[in-house]
Image (tube, rainbow, N blue to C red; front, top):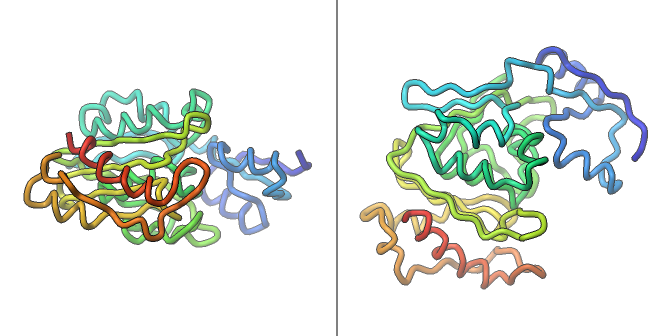
Length: 259
């Protein structure tokens, strides 16, 4: 691994100052550090958010679950408040990667990286969440822009994510057994933001399956998706599965998520 300078930011302002000086912001490091080991990223400096207490923690109030950006996947999975309010979100967090990833990876880091097969983007889009940053609030539908791309500015830092508590929600993931990323993952919900079906792993980024949402809007049940299909156009095709295979998985997993 190449040499680099490392600093622990004491607060968001200090992290932004480091970023302005050319440092790469480090959250849990579960994507950035492997990229550095492979020579795919070579920052001269890293500024860690790990010491900023204000970016950690979970609150439930006013029909909303709010999770600090530096809260780990393991913390979300173990949270009694999250399990009571949005069980599907706790279940999703509990099946991200392996124990190391869950105990080091963070929700803010996952969203900022926006891997096309990551799990958290499906929950954020599937629940109609709001991403809070140091300067604004971004609706889920506006946050995910494309492959590894979000609406975040270069020096913008995620501080928290707010999830409206749904009436019903479910998560199903068909995983790649080694990496445990989603070959296809589907998050469904019915709640304050209507009926939503978000898909990860199938395309260049997370997206909403609006055709399935329409079918579920009148009858939120697995039966409503009987015979449903999703177009393979724009889907990924690789050694793990063809575009047609992924397209066929989406309604099947959506039906299982609905229950």
